[in-house]
Image 1 (spheres, rainbow, N blue to C red):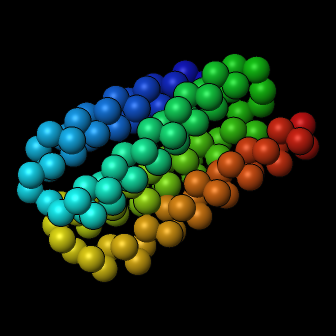
Image 2 (cartoon, helix red, strand yellow):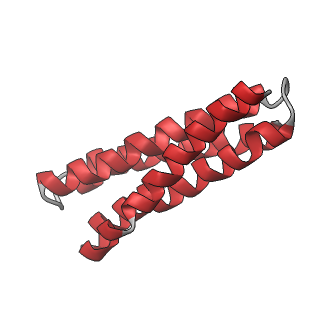
Length: 121
């Protein structure tokens, strides 16, 4: 589906931008531990942006019902998981780490639902 290709490509580009920001602008401003946290956010951000591109490509071959909810879960996961890690590092607001697992659950649910939907079809 074209919309998920656009979302996936845009989020992948944003992941590269944030990765470069972390590697260059943050490197001297945050602790090595915080830099690793930021890089974890970027890594999972990119993985799931690529997952959205996969969903977009597959969407031309299968019913939209099979991919729609997993795509929303991946997008929510990027916003909640990666977004909370970015904000945690940039604002030093440590309690944001408590919501990070919610984004991880979105990722997990998205992948398993996608697998289940493919199996079912």
